[in-house]
Length: 85
Length: 360
Image (cartoon, rainbow over all chains, first blue to last red; front, side, top):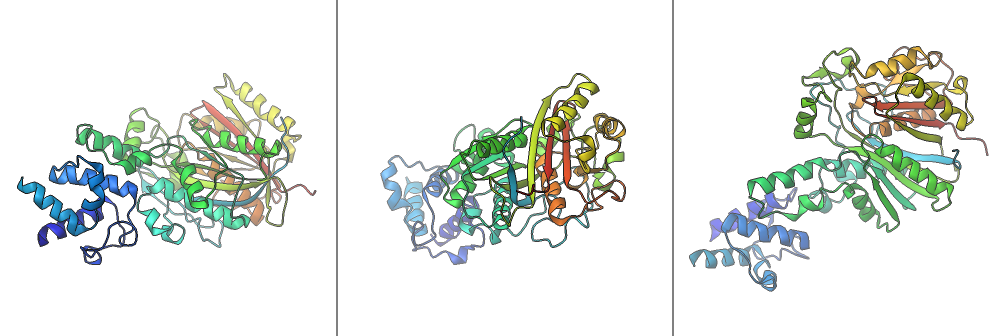
């Protein structure tokens, strides 16, 4: 799980071109949107593509996005759960 | 057609020469020996919020910086209209999006590069940054793009639809677009020293990129340092005579004679075939007028005439012709009236006339 979290942090920084942010700056439990990392709706679309491209996981119900993309930890848990299937 | 007085209150440029935060006006130039010239990047973070910066490609960043510099110089924080001209638009993001389409079999496309791949991205991003919901138009008309934006801005001012207009010309170069245009001899295939470009015999022009923005105003103020007198375009003249007649007609329309012009800034780009058009004029109709050239500073791009206007208005502001643009030391009178003449491959020809502001 820890390795997955670190990998996700790096992928998100690269995909979203988060200049001046390192994996160490991101707390895995902080919210990705709003107060935390400050991501927005365009970033949400980028994250959906990232999940599908890198992990082969497609989000069928867009309403689930809010829960899945709450933090790095929730994303990692979702990936782990779906990769077992 | 003569238009109402249009004043220049501010200008900003990001080009392959240091122009941002410079006390000196093109006194020294950067020498390159490259296939194409690329802009000197200012510290973008000084002008753009880091959160927004991460999504922006080079062309958007350089547009915003040059627009901000122009607005700072003019002392305005809002305008009544934003007019942009670009020949090729956001090439980097377009290529990124198209390459992703190929690599991913038209699946899994990310939104950012798509959103930023349209030609009006620059005008849109400037408007977002300013919170400006006024008239916003982008002209995409090859090497007439900037001239079209400029003419529209002048007409808006003439028709009293706007008091202050932000107008600019922007284009960026990429490896891919450079490569395509070398195949058809538009651009030089091999590296070339920019300082020697006018004597380089390789076919095509030395390619480049840049952005220049201006704040135009209906009223003269303490910020005003130049006045736009006119802009005109000519498509595919059939002969040198037609071109000469176009220039004469333009001057007469604006109530100028050849002897009133103190300097002509010409758009020679190092293309051995098409630079002859400039040489014929310099040795013919315009032979009594000192000439300057500017594309060794920025390279050729569709909206390069916007940088020529930045130079011309800078000359009027500084009351000085930098030696870096003139072929011979400038010995004429301090310029009051400057004509910019540009053409691309003898197809799109344009004239811009800029003067010291009239005493009102």
